[in-house]
Amino acid sequence: RFGQGHLVSGGFRPAAGTRKLGARVVELQISSYDIIALLDSIKKAGDHRMIGAVGTVNMFRNVEKIGEILGLSIKNYIIDDAIGQDVIDRMIADGCDAIIGSYNACAMAKKRGVENYMIYTGKQSLVRAISEAKQIAKATWEEQENSLYIKGVLDYASEGIMSIDPAGQIKSL
Image (cartoon, rainbow, N blue to C red):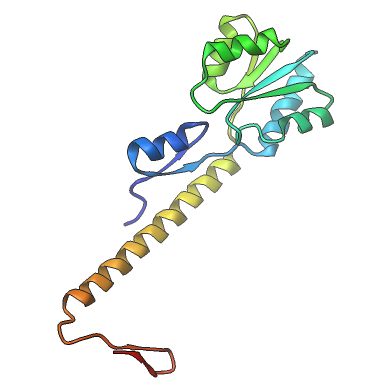
C-alpha cells in the first residue's frame, strides 16, 4: 500500500533524484565500519604515500581521522556533483598515489594508471536505508489518508463541525 515514490540512493544522487523525480530519496550512507574495512585492506595491500578519497560530504565522513588512526595519510576531496576527470587529475597532481571512491572515480583513476579502491556499502547500511524509506513512506501514506479523511468531513459538513477533547468537553462549534 505504501512505498511508492521513495528511492534509496548513494553518492550525490539523492538530492538530484529529489529535484528531478519529485520522489523522496533516502541517502544510502557509507558507515565508518565500511571505511575502516577498506582502509585496512589498503594498508595490508601496499605502501602508499598519500591516498585520495573522493566523494560527497557524507561518503567519507571522518576518513582522514580514521586513516590517521590506521597510520595512513589520506586527503579527502569533496564533490557536489558527478566526478570529472579534472578532480582525479588534481588528486594525482597533489601527490595521491592511490584513490578510493565510487565506480566512476576508480575507472578514471585506472585510466591514469593510479591504483584505486572502490568503496562498497555494507549490508547494515543498506538495511538501515531501506528501513528508513519504509518508515517515511508509511508516515507519508498515513498523512495523506488523514488529509483525505479531514477533507471528506469538511466536504459534507453543511450544518457545522463540533470538536471535543478526550474528556468529552466541547472545544468548538
